[in-house]
Image (cartoon, rainbow, N blue to C red; front, top):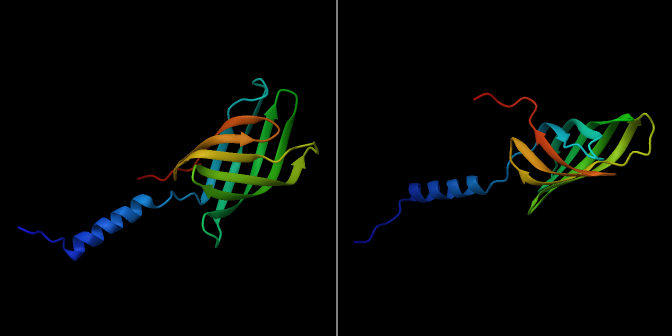
Amino acid sequence: MTRWITPFAALSCLALLGAAAAPPKIEGVWAFRTAPYREGTCELSGTMTIRKTAKIDAYTCTFVAFEVCEDFRARAEETCTATRTSNGLEITSTLKNVSPALNYVPDDFALDDVTSARMEGLMLSAADAAVVFTRPNPAIS
């Protein structure tokens, strides 16, 4: 006996495959925090907003970072571009303003565990450290 797949069943399967293959939505506001670095004397935290561009897998972003160390504190305003890669998300930053005026290095990120609610990877800057991004106000279901 030959069985045929109905058009509805075929479309349903294709829709499920398409939904499963869709990358996580990363647009919006994120809070981030690094693990301690520089022998445990510093941490970086802040808030980033990511926006989709017309280009596939490309985003623009802005963020404010607060670096708190044993011997100094700094506030940095940065702009960035984010690009999806096969391994996750790469964020490359440019400094707009730093207070107090220091030899501050832009904070780049290589994120290899990316979901719509959480992103993890490395901060790549004057020092490297593990970093976690979370949504500051998760949706209530």
